[in-house]
Length: 223
Image (cartoon, rainbow, N blue to C red; front, top):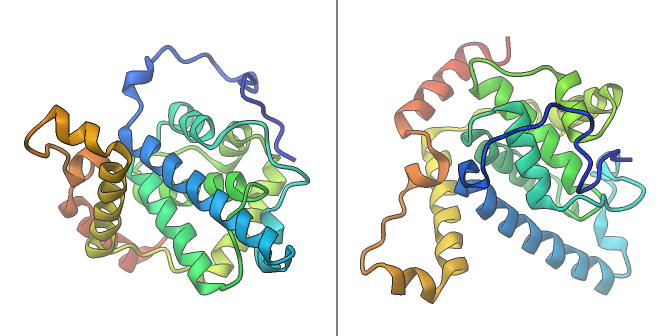
């Protein structure tokens, strides 16, 4: 069970950064994931619970955590200092996992564990410097042993396919950009006659960086 609540900082050092420093991609991902979870739980209810599938049971908690998805993502970002692109790549990993295991739904019981595991893996392959599993477990509100187990399970479910090409990364950024525009709706159009949001605004990483990232993966993976 996640040992963390909305107001629980899990005895980590207090952060002084203002909310304005939080990358916009976290808000967009929160919106997308919350909508996905709500839709999937409606599907599971209409299917009598049978549509949840068993493939993601290892990520299930006893009950949905008290902390919301936006606050959980913000907590991971503020305490681990991972790059914003890690959240995009982590989302790609989750999407890839679900497509490889049809019938497995991202729901409130598993979304938090999927997030902390996928973002941690993304940080390991994308960032030059990153925290170890024990720190991510502390931030995520799970034990080190559980996060180690979740990491192994996640990797095997993906067949250790952690490569994300620049083209795939860009396509997901464009998808998130469209979601942002839909989210803002008329407000975005009224505030500016020209669209100022770009892929770089969302992911804060260039396609050239992703090409270098993909090349390094093909040459050595996680070693």
